[in-house]
Structure formats: C-alpha cells, structure tokens
Amino acid sequence: MSEEQVRRRTGGRSARVRQAVLDATLQAMAEHGTDAVSIPAVARQAGVHETSVYRRWGTREHLVIDALLTYSQLQLAIPDTGTLREDLIAFAGSLSDYLNSPFGKALARSMATADDDQPLAESREQFWQERLDLARIMIDRAVARGEIPKDTDPALALEVLIAPLHFRVLLTRRPLDAHLAGRLVDVLLDGLIR
Image 1 (tube, rainbow, N blue to C red):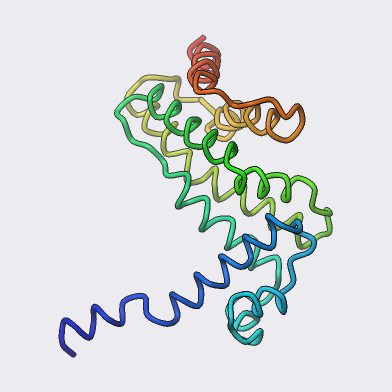
Image 2 (image 1 turned 120 degrees about the vertical axis):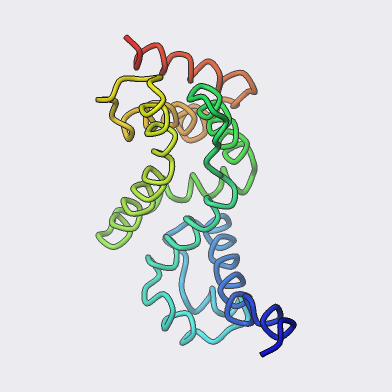
C-alpha cells in the first residue's frame, strides 16, 4: 500500500460517520435536552442508518457520553504551563469560555436537567469521572514539583475549582468574567497550601 493510500484511509469513512453522529447528538442535546436524544433521530440527522449507530454505541446513553467526552476533549484541553496556578487558570478560563458559548451553555443545562434514570445517571457519572481522570494530571504534576502537599485530593481540588463556574451558569445565570478564573484559583491554592 502506498503512502498516499494510507494517508487517504486515515480516518476515512468510519471517522466521518462517527463525527457526523456525534455532531448530530450534540446538536439534539443542545436543542432539545438529553432526554430527547434518540438514536433514530440522530441517525437521520447524521445521514446514516440507525443500525450503524446501534452497532457502534449500543445505547443512547453510550452515544451521549461519547459525544460529550469527545467534544469536551476538543474544547477543554489540559494545559501544561509549568506551574499549577497557571495550569488551573488556563483550565478554568477555557471552561468559562466553553460555558459562556451558547452551545456549551445549552449542553451544560441539558446534562443538568436530564432525568436521573439509571443508564443516564451512570453515563453522567462516567463522563465526570473520565474528565476528572484527565484533568488530575495538573494536580499530580504540582505534587511532583512540590507545589502542593502530597495528600492533596485531585478530584476535590478540581471540583472546588469548576463547581462555581457551573453554579453561575446553571443556577444564578451570572456571567463568567475574565477575572473569575484567577480569583477562584487563588482561593483554591490558598486552601491547598495551608
């Protein structure tokens, strides 16, 4: 196989179909809420047969979680600036930008208002666990550099940082301004270093 053939096949139809289905899922969530996502409607919107969606994802909950994780990994990269403070400010800043966007706000509200049926509750738990597992590298690096105590709980530290951002978007509907990330990080670090 030539290099050109390999290059052409990278991603290929399977990657395009996957992306079309994930995009259709996110759009359905943003417009109608998580509970309204259905595999037949997503397949129709994506221009694929619904058996293709069932074969790849199995359930709507798996489809929703894959769409959210894929989108969040693209939109919310984990920074590596060399210091915990700057990493957390960059992370909180990108989360603020995401939550300030109409699409990000709609997705966050969709996940927050979704019914807590067993499969969806498990999907939500999986989503947050995977996001925390990815983001904890910032805390682990800071512990290794000696910036914060070794007994720091990475999940709790990240929850303390991101909870106020979600609180503002979902409950008080107050804006996320450019200075909020730095203020939140300073409060968090003050608590970790004590």
